[in-house]
Length: 582
Image (cartoon, rainbow, N blue to C red):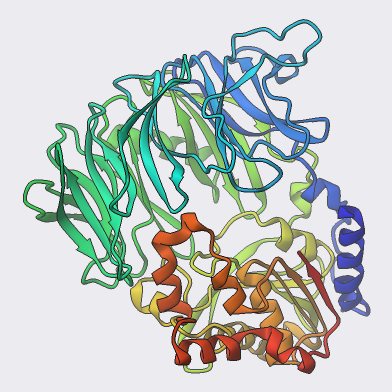
């Protein structure tokens, strides 16, 4: 079934490329789809905190599983740790003492995850392919959440269980070595997150108020005290305590357009600005703290390209040293040892999905480990460049454009690739879909339409109640921009997307039926009322946000708007060849 879908998808969109422009210097070789979309040979490596081992994902029986090897061993000597055959291991991490690897697994995609542990030093039983994994939670129909892995006790994980109430997670203390669970706090107050200080003490919580606001609470012995709050259209997210445990780093855009990094005093509720975008263009992107000292060492912002600022000079100097070895790449510090002596770093770019190395900070030596998708011919990949254009009301839309190599940039078959979410965004870097189609002669535009995150509250809120309307205009005007630039052939423009991108695909062919020549919708909602009715219980904290940003199906006005914006109700207008994958 998977291969049949791929073939139909390629045939539908491939028809757009027929009769493309004459060759200039000649296009690159055609890259087989399996090299781009198939399982990577090695991926997602993590250095153990003691620096002795590397764990990574690798296919076993065509399914990604966890392997481990000693740092000085070749990857060919790695040992299999998990034996999943139905669904790949999505993610894993080392415990702080390097004794276990933890990973989460659901049952055939039901999103009810349990937490598993495997001992990387254990040997398989007779006749087994891997050592046994222990299900630490062992619950059916329950979605386990991981809240904290304290340094103070590496045998402990704080988890949330929604076995008592499907909408809200009670807090438990889980002992990894034995699998025993102890209830710490019953969640009867709409708690969405728990925050521990650097000593492993429960100090703070976040709560979703009935009206959709977020409240930051101090956790006292027998009560909660609200010390900070932000509206349903704002964000306030605690990150980590500052050394000394007196104040808490938090990202927030309360009473501001751009999200910034601030310090919150849990006793007084007062905040102090730490940093916001020096260029005053985009939201705060993230922070990295030292494994050794817990000090803030790095902050970053996602503009047209990522911009990083270093708070620790030695840390920044080391990253810059690596950057000189890999010009025009972004350097990601993927994992580190407890003493920060060794880093696992990855160099990435628009034409490099990932080159991973171990960096010895004292010796200033980079030891190559592997390249993600080793067989991918980097020289045949196309560059991605940031562009902007104006939408129907003059709002400037940031986007990323990938043009095929070796052909004139005129009158090209073109694909619009709107992202999912919609409360997310595209970033500069390697994109498999963009590269696949650019390799086949397409121009590919990835628009960050209004409602995308990262560009401030005004840009985000401009998408409120605009599904299928101005949000869709931002995609449509991207087509017009490419046509006006002479890049796109107006008769050979397609659209493809997943999740909200699938909705935008359906909206594109239903609301602008003469615009697209082919379309592929991947798991996109066609009926917005059905979508909102199907919100799972554990999404209850953000239900109000959905209603405020999309429309409230409980009101006549909201229901009418949602029906109008649902492509299903305009399906009779569709002329475009359309593939729907659910």
